[in-house]
Amino acid sequence: KYEIIKQLDKWGNEGVEGHFTEPNKWLTIDDTVNESMSKLIGSKSNEVVIMNSLTANLHFMMSSFYKPTNDRFKILIEGKAFPSDIHAVISQIHLHGFNPIDSLIEIYPKEGDSYINEDDI
Image (cartoon, rainbow, N blue to C red):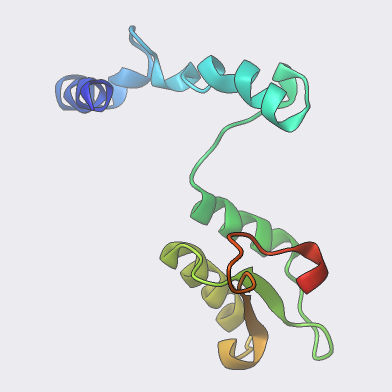
C-alpha cells in the first residue's frame, strides 16, 4: 500500500515528468521485473516486455489474430473470467459482426476441481 501511495504522490507532484525522474523512473520501471519474469516464462531477460493490462493485451492480440469466418468464429474462455476480459472478447466478436450468444463458449472446471483440465476441453 505504501509503494502505491508513493507512486500516486509522485504522479500528483510530477505528472508526466515522473517517467523520467528517480526513484523508479516510470519509463524503465518494467526493467525491475524482467529478470524474474524471464525465469517464470523460460526466456532471456532481454526477451521480456511487460506492458498494459491483460484486458488491453487481449484487445491487441485479438485485433491482430482473431479473423473469424462463417465456419470458424467461436471463442473458448474460462467461465467467470474477469469481467473486463469478457467485455474485450465480446467487443471483438461484435466488431466482426457475430453474436456472442453463438460465438462465446464458457468452460468451467469439473465439480470439485479448481482448474480446467485439458482433457475436458
